[in-house]
Length: 356
Image (cartoon, rainbow, N blue to C red):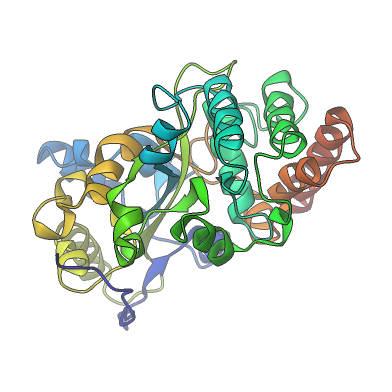
């Protein structure tokens, strides 16, 4: 199998075309990005527009205008051990929260040495996991009116879920000390049944684990109507200061349409933004196909249901503000209501700071 390695040679062009990540989006906007609506209009005429999810494209809108074009995405979701589920008497792969909790109970009874659910508790991976559950329960960071959603029932149900994971011993006792590598190692060493994180080919370094693993997105919550999992697209932006605006716009369009070699030959660590790029030997493995068929259709950007970036998200994301609710739930000692109230206050403070 031809494997992808981390791509280390990304270069910026000298004509102010930038590789845009969500953490720095607001900073880049201060430099006055050139609108890229013409690229979107051209793609609609050329039947390329449908190759992207609208949520992904809308993520890079600002005040109704397209200010960046996505080219790669970091998807989040679950690996699970199909053999462990079978041996524990779990008759089908869980699809809902209740089914997940039931599976965890059976796994724990079958083998107490197996951690049912391996999570990253010490870094931003914990809020990626938590918000994937929240999105599958129909709630994001904010609602459509730009108000924090931490105190409505759907968000509190997500906190309750994490409380149950801790109370029933379905996560590692030291989960709050686990960074991404620790949680990943727990799964790859065969000591966990489910693992939430980024999808990568490192799993193939562990043949037995890879052979018995499969991919899923998330689990539908009691108040949700569809599965959702958080994703993080990166994109290109053209700054208005460029001396060559026409050439820069053409380059961005060309780049987005011709980046497949980054993934098939350059070893780019993430996945392509264009669904049609999931082809060939590099994407024939079951992890890539699982991402294409199970995760990509359910992926939502971190600002969902808000279309586009909102003021304050840079602070929320950069300071890991959304870590609070899941970490507090996994730590214990606080009620769901108190956790929700504090989380809402932290989000509102970031929104207020952005408005000043």
